[in-house]
Length: 176
Image (spheres, rainbow, N blue to C red):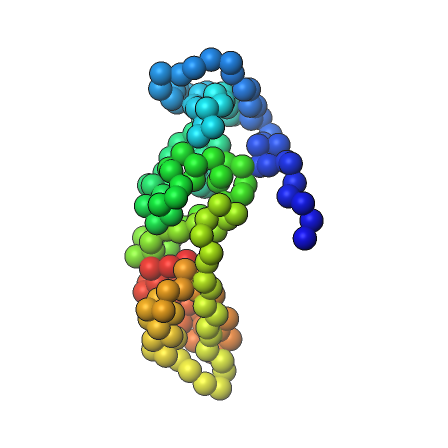
């Protein structure tokens, strides 16, 4: 296995963004307009400037601005060895992801993380084929995967009602 890279997502900021490491101590984080100043979990003070009017959409964008999202808070509850700030910093550095798209969050998704600092994850693969299984059976497989501790589920369905099956899985899955 190759050694981990010394580069992180901080080395690949979007066009129009800038990052400055400051030598000061902050009383509290500041998010005013397009300038975000915050202290990370290691005590490094970062000033991130974005393009005018930028609004974060993804977990990575929020983390890079020093924002701890509700999803990051929930992940910290599920990963008791990590603080909310550590979760944010790992996401910002690109070493952790939180698979929680807004559509799935609208159902009953319970956010989790995948990354070097997190505990081991269990993925369950399932799927209907054109010759067997249907939507009800796939939802039942989902329930069994959840019962036995799966952290994520991958739907590999190829059947004729693929859209209906995937919609049912999304609506019933508390895991990504």
